[in-house]
Image (cartoon, rainbow, N blue to C red; front, side, top):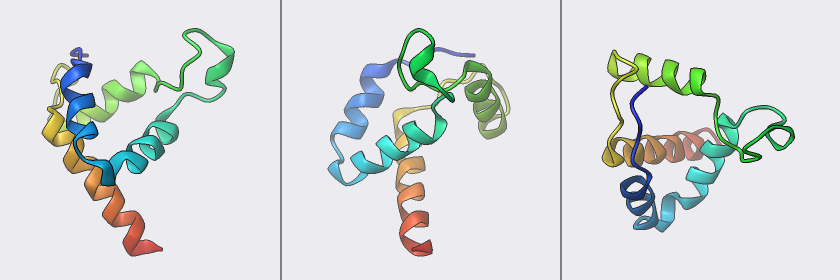
Length: 85
């Protein structure tokens, strides 16, 4: 799996306050179960899950998603949640 540089991703989300809540919801949805019981004690997704998600989105697990793709995904999630509620 390709490493995703966090600084550009964090900056892309930080510039858009309307998706901050969705970013938190997405992070919580992808967090490993009982994440607080094992190091690094952070709500991060399982590497295998992330690898699978990237492979299904881009055709290869070696592709690093761009910050623009992440923002588009979070905006899509936000629209879907609003239209179903």
